[in-house]
Length: 273
Length: 245
Image (cartoon, rainbow over all chains, first blue to last red):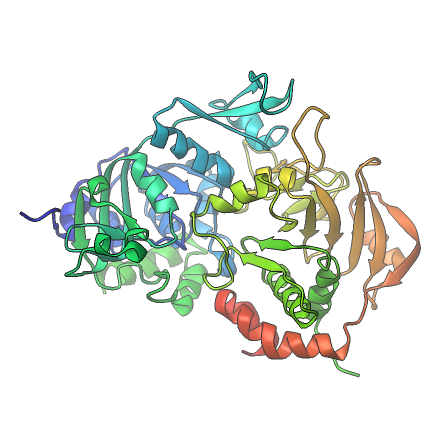
């Protein structure tokens, strides 16, 4: 019996519901751009993006297409190509809610869910305006007698469970184990998500667990609800170790998306050509 | 005399601040700090010294295998000596703002966000603030939003914090006791009067301010012939613009 469900890309897209809290991988961990294209075509609404810890063109396109109501992130940016224009405009005009965070807090909230504990403490952050505006965060005095410092204020972050996660991976083995390599934040995201779907460049006819070297690079199939083979599924973002980012295309987007009109023209071409 | 680009001068100036480090980490959107860290690593190699550099946005120059959280865990463990932070605004008490201008609820101009600054600023012993644009809109009296504060109360765990601020016109040192910057060096084409005019906050002036140091030929050669290609792996646009590689 096949050890995993092989789905079509549209079947994965259908798993995303309006209002879902969706996990968004950073530009270095396998951005599922082909999936994002189909999601935008479907016209999904009110998504809440949980970025670990940032998003680039994927988040900006979803926001510009009106699919998003809320973003929790440490940054939304086009990196070397400047600000994420649709994100900046949406925040300035009050179209979306931004829950400003910082990278380690976004990791820690998911780590709490990984461990199935209600919260996770984190150092730093206290005294910043990030902390000031996050009403869901709390500060307590360190309650431990023999660890940490006495009277030390410490920040507590709530556990966050995602509704759904989709990312793009270089390859999957015949049993549905996903090669994520050193991008271990994908494991954190998957552990903390109710449903996990993966698009991948290819399915290999081997078992990655047969070799200690490759076993350590896997996200085990037990966390995965479905897999779809999508060639060049991260384009124009990079798929580390497989292909680089298409910087010309991202630059083209960064210029076009400066206005809503330019964005719409770009998207027409991007989605349907 | 070799003609130097301003970026090369800044890379060299940053490199001088890194010579005693064992592990330097470089975060997002930081081609100049990244080049400086790799430069110091190459120079250390020539002296038979070991120096580790972790460039977050590089696969090749990266020591981490435990995902994006490892940078923060590693820093909190005290295993990173220097990290770089920037800011849309930086104020005279070294508070940094990476979020935007205007009041937070009615933000005027939105920037990417705080990244990992709210932890890194607390735990890395030497934070170098780096912001190329030196103007009254970037160096302000008071930031509009504190992504990470320049200093903290005594009972807060804070082994780290700001040590220097480098812009394309000047180098300042931060005095933790006085909560105030002190001007150390200015760019060769700058006057003290102009620096005062272009800085939005009050600062002290060192008794002997000097010009930024000109890198020697060996350093320039390493930078242009070796580091430039390394940088092109993770900041292709920058490497192309500065060195045409």
